[in-house]
Length: 385
Ligand code: NAI
Image 1 (cartoon, helix red, strand yellow):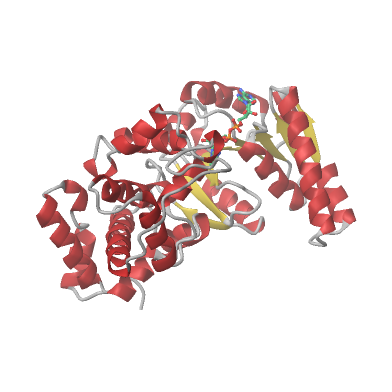
Image 2: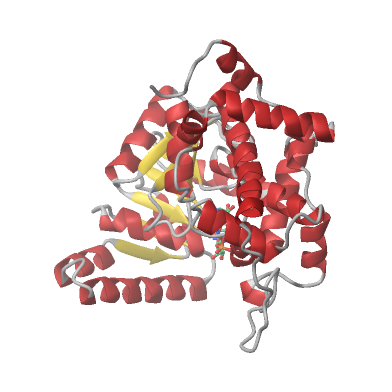
């Protein structure tokens, strides 16, 4: 099947590589010629590196390269069986583009968006036949991250869902199906990783370095929350938080933080600006963590309990199955364990008790335990046996 990718930026280029390496003829369309050249040049570099490291043969590299056709003309999608859109995150622009795509592509062509934050239903609403619209959400970098979230909208047909999922499974990706709600699974369940860490800092419990030390050394996470926010870019991470907050009708659980907002306002975006929560300049003197294990344990407990509650609520609201929620967090953001398995390990009653204590102490909705957790504790159940 011929695959179309619209938008040759970070995500589009990665998706093109994945499809081409899996033997598809791929058409990459971008309006900007320089972007197309850059994408081609980068793919060449990646292929050369993979050959050098003997991960692929020269023939395979040549084959992948020859599978890709670069174009500035959207009409080149005329023979595609699927088009995956990865252009700017703007509903108005995406809507125009999808209406156009439907006119150009064959009748049965699946039209997919890689959007992180827009609703698939709203993008699909511009189509004459919205049953072929679906969300296919890759993670960055697409060739390396195993997880892909598949998001059927209310209009999506079961055939579209099956075909899209089968295709991405064939690309040796791990697919999870999620409801068309803000943040899908990963970007929803991960909110407390940032939010609760910022809150702990704001309460003066610990500084950035100490929280990051606790989460990595004691918690086993690959990166601490502040290092990760600096890596993603505080401007981007803050915008995602604001979008999720308003998309959830201002549910206080997702409230953005003033600390992060001030860092953005100050231009402290993180690594890319040389300074974020930490200083990345050459002669930087960053604060040292307070390696007090008791404090560290408390920090990990609090963030982890909030993450687990969020994961349970996602299952409660059928955002994804319990299996998919655990897979999503281990394969999409490299958490050391699935949050629901982790909950089983800690004990559902222990998790509930800790949440109740926080809920009592703060009187804030953000700490309310998920009804599913209460129900399961009452029935003495676990997520996995
Ligand atoms: P990017 O800014 O790197 O690339 C977007 C590309 O689209 C640019 O090359 C631009 O020239 C092109 N473009 C814009 N309008 C166009 C049009 N009408 N026709 C053809 N090409 C057009 O953006 P990025 O980061 O690759 O994001 C793309 C999409 O993927 C967004 O919807 C974003 O939310 C989503 N996404 C981004 C992730 C990330 O980590 N960057 C992760 C997962 C999803």
